[in-house]
Length: 244
Image (tube, rainbow, N blue to C red; front, side, top):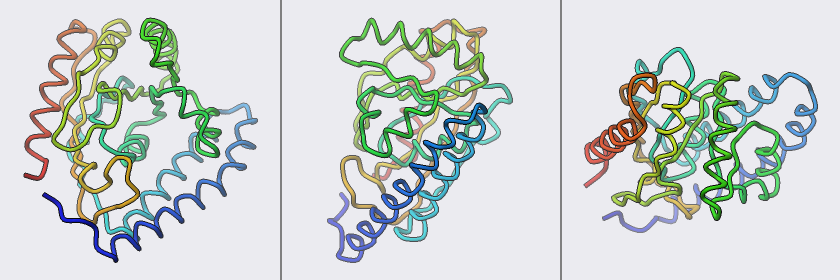
């Protein structure tokens, strides 16, 4: 059981929040201006710069480092990532690890000042989770289009951030999309929530472990088998890398 944050951890967390907010606010008008350009690549490079800046600040201010394992498992062609979701950290890191990544996210995020305004300028797949059938149709339609455009699609199958040691029911949309598009699926496990907890501004120093699992071939496996294997691998890996 982790002890409560020390005064130094609270101070460093507050400083990081200030730096994170400043970087986001400063870059927002640049993103909005660049988004008017016809080439998507400009927006993408700018977003990667933003994510890398936030992670660099996190390392230097809060003392959070990371150990990335399994990079050799990332295939050359684009596909779908099925990842554990514990904090905001993995949304930044996955965006850097997988080329031209877009996320399946809830529509409400687009309404957040500054951050949401920038999200809306990219090709993310925003769905209304209150209408499951409509959301599934939107995911299939937009997902197939994004894959054809060369994007990686990142899906958090549990649908929301889950505290360390907990799990939620895995949705099956990722496997369905992969089987329909016949693209590779990469499972990802990590323990970021132990250092950057959900719904908390406190950041605890330490090293996050992120593991990229073996590819599941959407051209050969049915949707239910893709989902079953991904969930089994993710949860087994979480048991290995999570703190007791």
